[in-house]
Amino acid sequence: MTRRSLIQFSAAWALASTSALAPWLSHALAQTRFPDRPIRIIVPYSAGGGGDILARAMAPRLAERLGVPVVVENRAGAGGNLGTEHGLKSPADGYTLVAISSTYPCQAVVSRKLGFDPLHDYTPVSLMSAGPAVLAMGKHVGVQNMAGFIELARRAPGSQAYGSAGVGSQAQFATELFAYLAGVQLNHIAYKGTSQAFNDLLGGSIAIAITTPTFITPFIRSGRALGLAVSGPKRLPQLPEVPTFAEVGLADYEYTAWNALIAPKGLPAEVLARLNLEINHVLSTREVTEKIIADGVTPVGGPPETLSRQIRADILRWQEVARVANIREE
Image 1 (tube, one colour):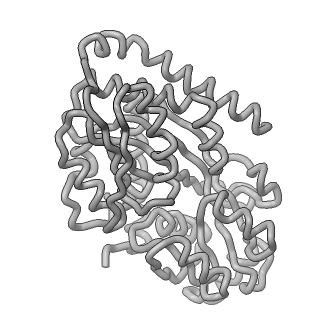
Image 2 (cartoon, rainbow, N blue to C red):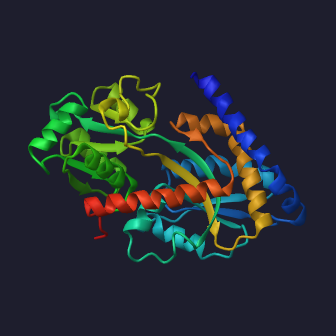
């Protein structure tokens, strides 16, 4: 699929999703005067990450649709839990949203001291984007493909290290899922951020790490790293030489990195309806669609229930991975 056709498809899908919501929205929207003051989107991570970039791309377009300022506020710490807790303990009036990622269900599984219930203390608003990940390997490892790496790791359990942004990060869970399916034991090295992990991968201190296509593509193209596999049903246009997990014999491997918006528990139905409608509209615009696709992911949108199902399914899956890999909060 070409870039042009992908953009057209994404826009058409988001518009179709919005149209499907019309019967649910029509009555609710007639009942509300929301909003009448600025809305803030709390990003529980540092500025510059994928979720932050997406929130900032959407904020001005949402402001145009809603007729009030939409402000992005970064509140990083504790794997995203500090900012998420702050947002979910705000009034449930629609004026505070939280931009979560697929780290949310990971933290729900591993964190013992959450100040909120990750299954019940939120209102799902909408998925925003979703995309695959690439398992990358440093050139220093000395093998050329997935089969070679798996053989190397099996010969000496624990000898091959991987890096992530810390205990409970989605990269840790995604890599441990790979290790389980491949039948290997890896050594986890926790970093304070993904960039630090990849500095060590390129420098020869760790063997593998998993990240977004946008981040790793320049390193693979320059020959500084090798792509072992990409999650998802097909190869990526920007990395056509990197096989899918299914193609390397790991057909059961499923991992999608996503971003979404949630609100505090108890958000009025009419406010939720308005927010969901406008978010879906913004996701269908060419400008936002192009920005999302440029970051290597796809616009999603859809009704709130889609996000709720995604969170619950991920929590169930990661609970099993945490049990098998003995992932525990330190």
